[in-house]
Each structure stands twice: as structure tokens, then as C-alpha cells.
Image (tube, rainbow, N blue to C red; front, top):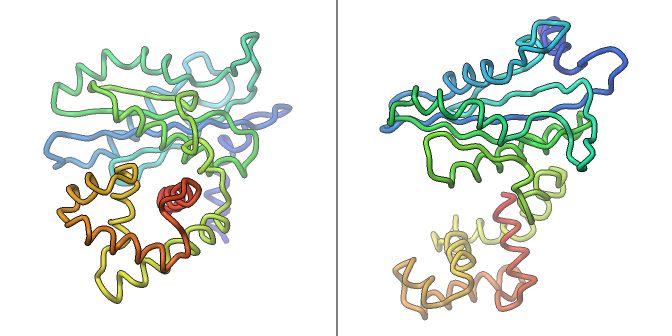
Length: 258
């Protein structure tokens, strides 16, 4: 269709970085939040990424044409082509580094925010195929959430700072995610819809409290016996045992992936 053809022509400089070079990409996510939340941050974040990601030393097409940026809500996403990703002697890769990006923009952005706004940035690792772009987006979003947990008006984090399941989950195929979460959580969701039992919130709180009956009951404002009844119902509906580490881990991952 004509509309798709037009979109592909616009995307070509990003998806095909240059003749004779294998395409590589990084994803950068930015979020701008204002105190009070009255101003939508997405357009500001998009303009911000369009400015700070332009390489003044780039050759060929205009640099701004080689970066695809869009926004949704308060978040902006940039797809940045890397014509050549070369391993350095220390084992690292060239491309965008969160710390270098932060160093370049922290002072002017902090001054411009004037104590009533906040910018957080997340940078993915380079990916070498289109199949990796979805995982790179999730990785950049996770990195931005790591940055958001830090103090300061302008914060950034890169993929190197992600560890454990946070790094692995974005690369789980969609059909595997759906099957895994449905098998564990759908019985609880169905029960909650029928009985308003709040089993899913109870499970989330129980895991967040590291399985402590007392802390979880206090958080949910429940008697411990009521909590034990709910957890027993969760185990009955799923065939799992929340005293076992393996089953706790499965529930934890299912909740994260859902």
C-alpha cells in the first residue's frame, strides 16, 4: 500500500545505514516529567533526543535524517543506526554510551529544567538484526527505569547496568511469554473476576515481602490467617507451592512478563 511504501522510504536512512556496512542499531529512551504532571512530556522528550543524538561529525545524509524518533505519552524513543560497530581493545563496543551522553547534556538540561522537571535516559546495547530491535527497546526502557530510581534532575543508565532477569526478559519471544504467564496467572485472574478475591495483588505483595507472612499481612491490612487462606487458594488453583524457591521464582517472572 502507498502509505506503507511512504513510511519505508522515510525509514530507509535509519534501517539501511550505508552501503557496504552491516546495519547495527541502538535504542535510546527518554522520559520528561514535570512537577504537577500538567504538561505532556513526550513531545519535549522527542525534541530533546533529536537534538542531543545528532553527531556533528557525521558525514553523508543529514544526521537528523538518520535517527528515527517518536513519542508516546511522556516517553520518546530513538532508533539510532550505527554504520559500523567495532569492538574496542578493552572488549567494549563503540556507539552511544550512557555516561558520555549524560556528561554532555547534564549541565544544560539541569539548568533548563529549573527545578520543576526531570529527564531520565536509557540506552540499549547495539543489536545486529531487526529481530533484536524489540529486545533493545525493552532493554533501553529497563535502563531508563534504573536511571529514574537515582536522585537528580538529569539521570541516565546503560545496558551494562542491567543484570539478572531484567536483561533476559526482553528477549523472550512473545508466544513463550504469553504461554508462560497464562499457565500460571490466568487461573488466578479468572478467580479474581468471579469472586473479587484479589489473589493477584496478594501474590505480588507476598513475593515483594520475600514470603514474610507478618510483613505481607501488615502491608495488605489483613489478618495473617486471611493471608494464609489466600495463599492456599493460589497454590490450589495453580498446583504450585509458594514455600518452594522454584515456584516463587516462576510466579515472580510471570508477573514481570505480564
